[in-house]
Amino acid sequence: MSTGQPDRPDQPAPDPEETTMDTENLPNAYPLADQEQGNGGDALTPADFDANAGELLLNEVREALTRFVILPDEHSTTGVVLWIAATHAVPAWAHAARLVIRAPEKRCGKSRLLDLVEATCHDPLLTVNASPSAVYRSIGMKRKNPPTILLDEADTIFGPKAGENEDLRGLLNAGHQRNRPALRYNASTSSVEKIQTFAMAALAGIGAMPDTIEDRAVVIRMRRRAPGEAVAPLRTRRDGPALDNLRNRLNQWVRAHLEHLGTATPDMPVEDRAADTWEPLLAIADLAGGPWPDLAREACITLTETRDANAQTTLQTRLLTDCRAAFGDAEALPTTVLLERLHADPEAPWATYQNNGLTAMKLGFLLRDFDIRSDTIRFAGSQAKGYRRTTFADAWARYCATPTTCAVCHQPLTHDDGTHTHPTCDPEARR
Image (tube, rainbow, N blue to C red; front, side):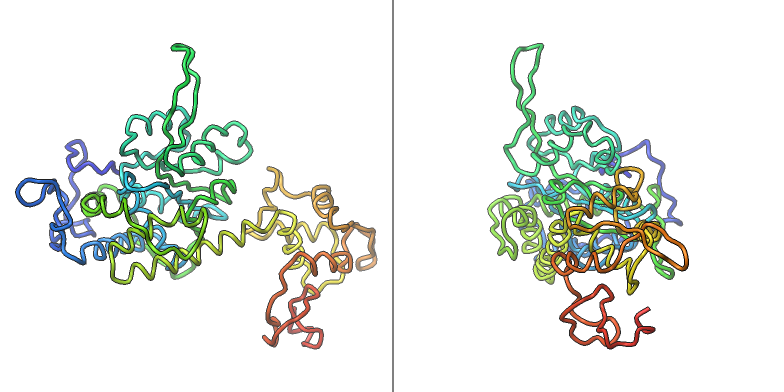
């Protein structure tokens, strides 16, 4: 995507017949993108904007996102819109929220969404395999107004080679809070250098990011488009100028209100680190007005609760829950069948667990702490290693949440034997 600079003589002019985003008839509720000054030649001030300018701008960003990508829900869309706007006010914030764009598989739109973030955020610095030192220097050269760090294919950074990227993970963690520099010894000067880390950052990749990063992030869980869900193709040559224009107008509106944003204390529906992460986004929403303050708080609560629910599920309790789903109403399963069903869940980590996927030996190791062990069981006339439902029953009751309603009759369910149904419900209907 483009860099956001208004003058780029080296880029071909867009074909007027191809342009789908209107760059000729721009809204007049706020200054045009190429205006750098307000009335009298001074810097733009809030007085240069109509009262609903922010609301209209955020609406435009939302329309641009939903034109080119399918987001999972309205709350996710709201979170991304507000995060993009917040990148334009980095000097005003004490905390720089992370944006995590994750998906269970390829072709879920995560890279396309990152392209749109790049096209509309403040001073994007997009990379796939940058060294930590390069990122440190990029931030340090613009310490008062740092770039927005965008990392694509972040799963390759924090996957099997995670140990090689501790410096980068440390930068992303420390850079969430202002005045948390990294210390490096400079042998040439025999001195310790303070390297700035504070900057907004977005990461896109397959699977979950490290807990320390997601704990500081607005987490967006992308999914593959369903049949019938269509989006417009994104073409830099055709759509870039209009996105640049939107970026510039958003920047002008935000920058005119930096003083207000720097002292804003929005009412927060969450606490602790979640409040640190969402405060800039809610400050932007309150400034914009219209429906955005309510949309922002609904998104904050929903996305934070979803993230916390996932974070509180340990790998082993996740395995218990997934085993319960894999069993269905079976009394016993061969180990091979249980593993096949666990691997088949695209949202679960088992197909790629420890690089080669969950094996019988690894499965036994993870279940051992719950006193669950395999046995030799007779299946359809032959014997094989497998697991009995009865060996899971105690662990399921202790560690796995019970569905609140029966899957068949939809009446309250006070005890779950693993089938998510009442014992009296039709067994065939449960299959």
